[in-house]
Length: 272
Image (cartoon, rainbow, N blue to C red):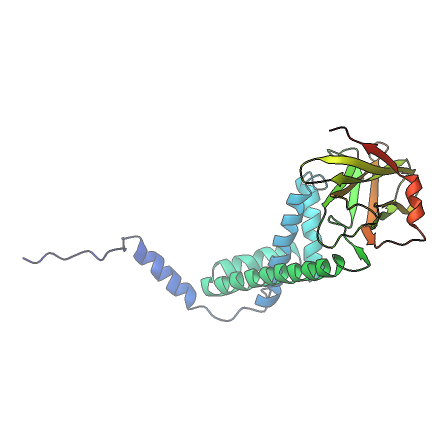
């Protein structure tokens, strides 16, 4: 008597699932009442991007209503209603072939956006890291600071790299909005080696009011700094938000006409 062997990898529940997938695959054209595939893929890509923004900025979207308003703005951008999106997503969910194609296209859009962003940042960095007058700011260009945030201090730190030269100056500048109280700015340059800092030069300034504000530090023309760093400490009232736009840190090569501005800087010699 010959025993029938079981086909490996198959189980009883597989047959109805396979039949279900085959039945979905038989469905075809997307009805006109459903958001069409390309537009739906763009919409879903925007929703994925929006959700990432919300997750990274929870202080601005503390509850479901705030997040819903944000999502509603995405629907409005594409000219559809939440009901249209839900019904379209339901249709795709019941038509597996179209859904898989939609899902693949959404991923493709997101990957293209990431690639374009990465290429743009790389190009900007390539331009900004070399040259006589370049922007080397490492952080976000638009910053909001308020009492409800964990910190009202914006900081940065740049280690020396091969593009640095002795006598380089660094100007930190930004455009302020809703800047009612004082903000304290500081820039510093450390001199020494990879083991220990021997000397620090620094400059500080206090500003208030809206508009462009800046502070600059001029490095020593006889010695290369190992690090340039700084901060902006914002004062706010209650729920007031102070916004900084177009933040930049401009590095310029040694200019004999402005090098005498070093007299504004203070120097601290650290004991070994």
